[in-house]
Image (cartoon, rainbow, N blue to C red; front, side, top):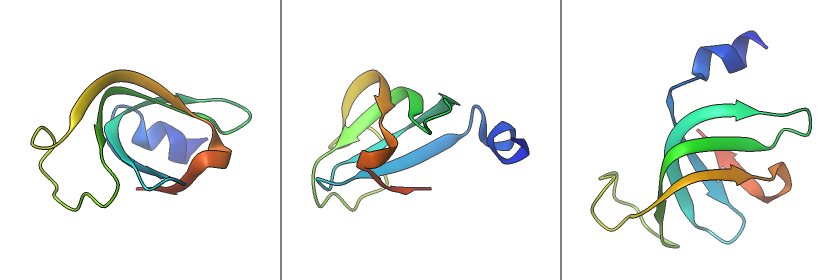
Length: 73
């Protein structure tokens, strides 16, 4: 619980199974470990640049089922 509280409101980068990358602000999780991000940008498969707006598409708020998450950093 302390680890989750430490990252509340911090930027999180989520990579899902199909290779897409999502960067947004960590809002919460649930008992099933689904992750909710706000102010999210989606980047296409293979995107390597760290610029948030360039090449990214703003998608707002998203919930990621844990089974689709490959990496969270």
